[in-house]
Image 1 (cartoon, rainbow, N blue to C red):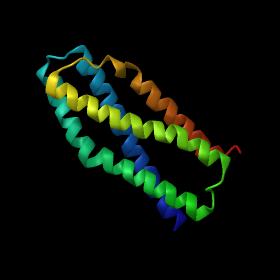
Image 2: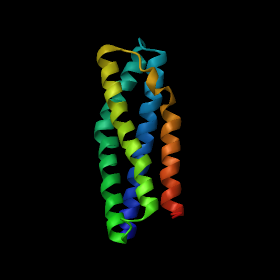
Image 3: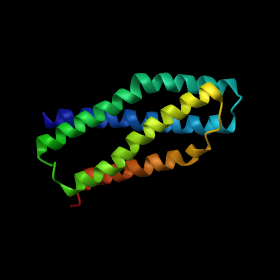
Image 4: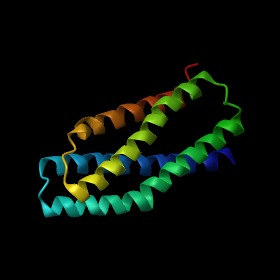
Length: 137
């Protein structure tokens, strides 16, 4: 059963990270070209994608991850507790990205805060990935 949950978890992580990176790049594009209608349509499309795919993938990531942690008895492992920090950061980043895109589509306010979002997402994901695979402590 563990391998099936792990497969679902990995698939959901791929969907989540790809959706978050797409949102991050869309926010950068919209900051550069706030009046462009094609960029605006991209933002609207990504907002729908986020609601249909990325947000449910986030829920599945957490549910499958917690299922694996409790099932394998890792709840007191130091590496798992440390892994929760970048995982929580990614969850928060997802929430902030969605709200920033909604705000932009409604008011066209600048979103320069998200210029570094793609690298932050990749670094957090790399930390989660390393801790999950290496289990260093």
